[in-house]
Amino acid sequence: MRSLRRLFTLLLFLAVTPAFAQAKKYEGQEAAALRCAHIVALTAVALSDAGGIGEAEKEVMLGISFLILDGHVSGTWAQKKAALEIVRDRRNVTDTLEDFERYAEQCLRDFPIN
Image 1 (cartoon, one colour):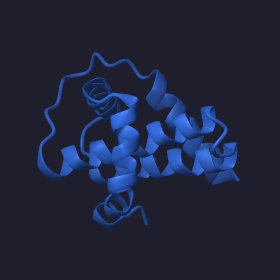
Image 2 (cartoon, one colour):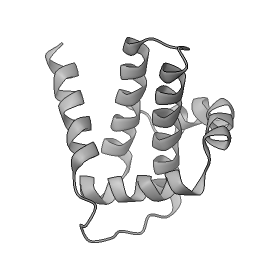
Image 3 (spheres, rainbow, N blue to C red):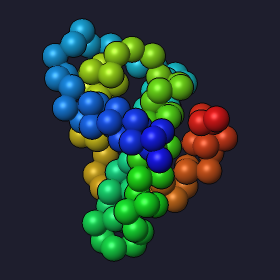
Image 4 (cartoon, rainbow, N blue to C red):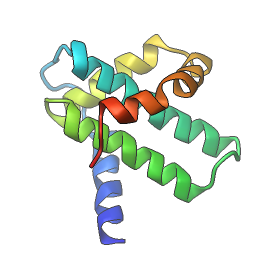
């Protein structure tokens, strides 16, 4: 429970960290990791909002997204957040949910979280 609280504290920090840090351009594997983190997080929120998953499942998925960012993307949390916002703005929700169906398993193979 303590580690889960710590994880959510970090997620909250990520959500409120200002995005005015030095911009960072992500390419290759890091860009792919950002896309994976985005599709997992957005899908978690969308499914939870639609009643498709419970709060516990949503928290697990957000934790996976966080661990992908933490383990596979360099830079500060502000830089990661800014990059995630760019990814979010490039894809609509429907496309992102379709991406989740197509790529979720590959994301976990390419960007292990343990």
